[in-house]
Length: 113
Ligand code: 5GP
Ligand code: ZN
Image 1: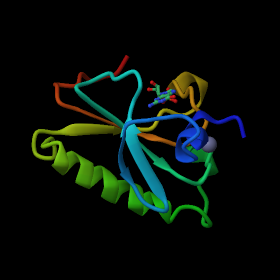
Image 2 (image 1 turned 90 degrees about the horizontal axis):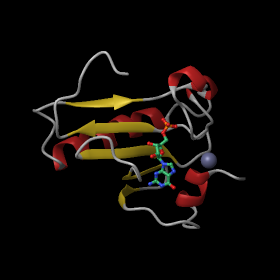
Image 3 (image 1 turned 30 degrees about the horizontal axis):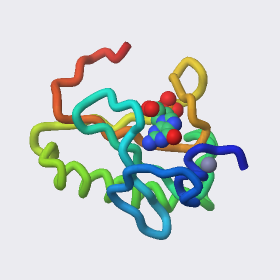
Image 4 (image 1 turned 180 degrees about the vertical axis):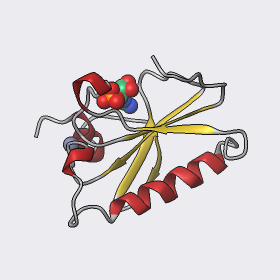
């Protein structure tokens, strides 16, 4: 499948991986928008939030656990951070493999652009 995140998961292209288990991988975003900008990705190819169902939703718990741990490891758990899932064209999704942006290390503005 021609999916950049599947290629990272399959080690066909490199990434700066910070966490990996059987279900989830987390790595640095190639184009960081904050001092800490990591992507937390289910290893199963799920195209977007719209494709989450009873069969594959168990991984969401793992993703939130990984997000919590990564926030603590980067010392942004108490300062604050943002977990973002862009969805669809107007939502700004460019990679069609579900991923959670974990952003932190600076004051994040609201509303987003
Ligand atoms: P989206 O726009 O779909 O929410 O987010 C996709 C993110 O993936 C972007 O922030 C982009 O910088 C990142 N990205 C795209 N291709 C690669 C890649 O090959 N390696 C890494 N580490 N990040 C990528
Ligand atoms: Zn994929």
